[in-house]
Image 1 (spheres, one colour):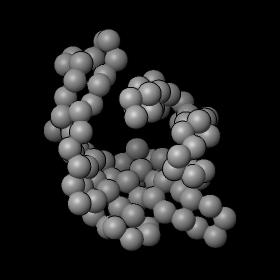
Image 2: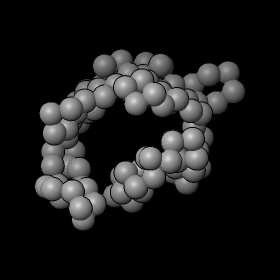
Image 3: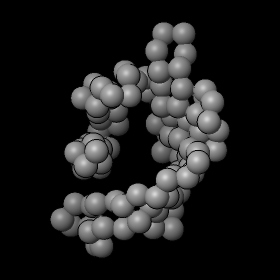
Length: 97
């Protein structure tokens, strides 16, 4: 399954909008996705473990637990507590969905 999307950056990013693509590499737990946009890409692994859910983005050295996928507030807080550099990017991404 593939998904095309439109990225919206902050005021200081040119261009302000660009196209991206998500390729679902594995459709069973653990899920694997490849996200591409503007000539770069990164790999996402996510799934469930005995006590909850997790997300890993190996290209960015990110790995953390998640609440349910619909709990954007908790997931945002968790990701940005351990990875504060994601704060601006995540706020922009979560506010558009």
